[in-house]
Amino acid sequence: MLYYLSQWIMDQAHGTNWEYQVSFLRLFHYITVRCAGAAVTSLLLSWWLGPKIITWLKELKFGQEFADNAEKAGLAAVRENKKKGTPTMGGILIVISLLLSTMLWAQWNEQVELTMLAVLVLSGLGFYDDYAKIMRQNGDGTPPRVKLITQFALAAFVGIYLWNLPARSELHLIGSKHVVVSNLVTDLMVPFYKYPLHVGLGVGLLVVLLAIVGSSNAVNLTDGLDGLAIGCTLIVGFVFLFFTYLAGNFKTATYLEIPFVPGAGELTVFCAALLGAGLGFLWFNCHPAQVFMGDTGSLALGGAFGIVAVLIHQPLVLVIAGGVFVMEAVSVILQRSWFKYTKKRTGTGRRIFLMAPLHHHFEKKGWHESQVVMRFFILCVLCAVVALATLKLR
Image 1 (cartoon, rainbow, N blue to C red):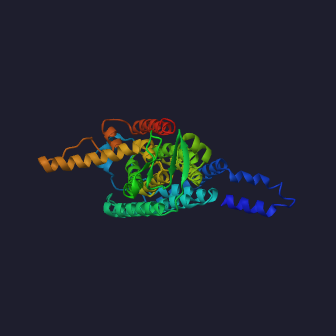
Image 2 (cartoon, rainbow, N blue to C red; image 1 turned 90 degrees about the horizontal axis):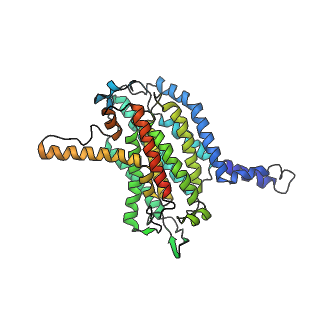
């Protein structure tokens, strides 16, 4: 919005005595300036809205009064604080700050609009799930199949829409070889390999589906300790801040031999707004948490990472950067699969971990909640470094 307003003012002042006085508005043409503005705006919005939203959620009694899975498993005894009564649905704060800041500072295009649409849909789904849990006060929200159907429908829409976009062929000189990257769905970049793979529509759509749905649910599963999910989100968001900026700049994309995606630079503004909103939320979510993001925030943030990764031809980099999210999701899949398999074979279900997701396993081993969070942050930083290394190690 500010970009268009500044452009309109400069057009009106062109050829008049005011032209020099408003020349500073050219700053709004720079993505770096708008990224800084988006980050600061979303951070200030979060700080300003945070106490108001927390108070509002408390007044509506949108708090977690039921025992969560961790408490049922006996972890409440080793925690200094109880989770009961803490307001959930705090993801509203993240989504509002993120979308308002993005709308204010970004130059709107298909990539930005698709990403904001995904955030809105998934936050709505998460809100409905959180609301159902609170009303029933038993931890049972939206049936898993309903959530998956909605997520897959959204991902399929995104994939088909991107596949039907007019071909955007970019010719790159990679070494001594000319490479054409033409479609966000059928062409796939593999980390540590410089040439894009033409995987076709079927595999391409499958990758899109797994990136968006998998990422959305992985972040959701990670949201179980104070500050854990949002802290890891900030680290992964920082990685994609770099990737989106590089992919949207022809010179840097050519130099680093990565696909150049016209308009992807505006996703950098979105990522900056996400960082600001995430930092603002962490202010209230750090131990002991004053509010939880709930599915309202976790589903939306995970889905946002998935679609951003797809839009810049880097869905597999998300697997590396979001390594902690992947570990959390895999731990749940392995735990449930092994339990069902052993129960079917022996009549008694067995477990691989003391408890899943993985962060609860370490709590059961005696790690303090803050220890788990900080150590997972360290692992997430290491994953981020490896993801950034894929820019040159190919």
